[in-house]
Image (cartoon, rainbow, N blue to C red):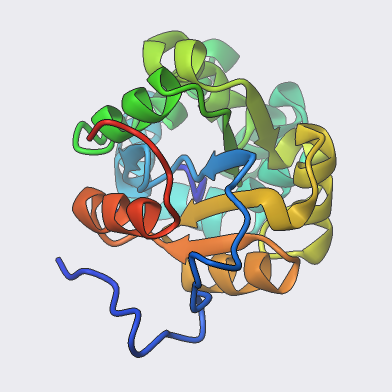
Length: 232
């Protein structure tokens, strides 16, 4: 996800370890619907970031990947341990280059495309009065880029549980606790969809009703199985 910045339907008769077996009779209607950002709402590719940053400063994309991703620096940026300024400085120091910070962050962040198949589901949920949120491992640079570029994020989502602000990454248990607190709802009233199995498993362990994202069509089935009223 950051990890932000991926058709089979899910088979409820044989539930996987990462999704709950649901009973419409006993399951409360979700009070909040959390969506992951990367590879659920938006597609992304870290390879593009490496190519663009490499072209900006004149070093190979493979070297950019070593500095930013293999080293764990980008993960600390997502965790909120590094500011934009510190992240940029860490890259320049490791690469032995100087470059404009804003140009660097743009090259690093311009890697997203809207997952248009999911937008109608989100829009219909919001239109039927459901409360929506984003729960994502992401960094300030990526979030600011996406927030400015994609109206759907600004207009349809009320709650933004972002790792760099929470100072906690999925799949840590604390991340889900903080996300529920931020939304002001009990964990068992939160529906969550994520494209990574480990994040779904951890969310379910934290009390969420979490499912693995495979396609928009499969997500719509999961929502209908929970008696969620929306026109899609």
